[in-house]
Length: 369
Image 1 (cartoon, rainbow, N blue to C red):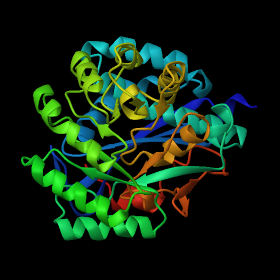
Image 2: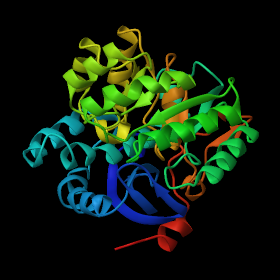
Image 3: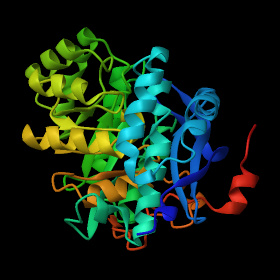
C-alpha cells in the first residue's frame, strides 16, 4: 500500500448546525438544533478520511477552536496508520487543559478520521480493520420518540410508530420533577406496546443516590431493560450501592472519559451494561479497550449512541458482546452513505471506510462560524 494514501497532507474541521424537528427535552436539557463537528484528513494522494462528533450549545464551537489551534496543525506529515502513536503524543502534551473534556475529545474526531482513511486506503469497510464482523445486522432500539417534552398522547403515538417501523425496543426519558408522572408514562407505554417490546429508561444523571434509591425500585413493575445514567457519572460508590439494591440493570459510561474509570466501575459492581462513547473516550482504539474490559467482566456492551450511529455500526459489527445500538435519526441524512435499516435492524455496511463522509453540499448549507 502506497504511503501517499495514508500520509496526512491537510487537516481541516467543519462546524455544522443541523435543525432538529420539534424540541427535544430530557431531565437536563432542551434541544432545538444539533451541532456536528467534523474533521477531514486528506492524504498526499488526495484520499479523504472523515471523523465527527456531536453536541449542542457552545460545546462544539469551543471544541473546534481547540482542535483548530492545538491538534490539526500537528497532524500534517503524520501517517494515519500510526494514529496510536500520535494520539498519545497529542493527548499527553495537552492534558494540562484537563484530562477530560477538550484534551480527550480533541483527538477523537481526528483519530476516527485516521481509521476512515486507513479503511478507504485498504478499500475495505472499517469493521474489517476492527477484527472482522460477527453479524450481518445489528439490533436497534429507538430513542427519538421518548423525550420528556412530549405529552402522553404524543409519546404513545411515537413509540407505537417506532414499533410499526420494526424496532424491538424504545427508550423513554425519565427524571422529571414529578416521578409519579414518569411512572404514569411508563405504565402507559408498557400497556400500549405489550410485553414483547423492550423498554429502556434514561435519567440523564439527574438523581442523587437518595432519590435513586427511592425511585428506581418501582421500575421493576414495568420490566424495564435498564436504568441509564441515574447518578453523577463519576460516582463509583453511589452506583455500586444502587446496583446492589435494585433489580433493574444499570447502564452507564457515556460520560466517562477514561477506560480506567470504567474498569473501576466494573470492579466495584457499579454497572451491569457498559455504555462506552468513542467521542468521550477519544476515539475507536480506547472504545475497543473498554469493550475488552466489558467482555472480561462478562458484561454486554451498548454503545453510547446519540447520533454516532455511523461509527457505532462498525464497532457493533465487530464486537460479539454488543447487544444493540441506539437510533436517533437527526443527522442521518447529512452522510454520503447513511446507516441502513431493515425491519428494526441496522444492516452492516459493505462499502469502504467508516461511513463518516459528509455530503459536500451540506458542509456549506449547515455551516456555522
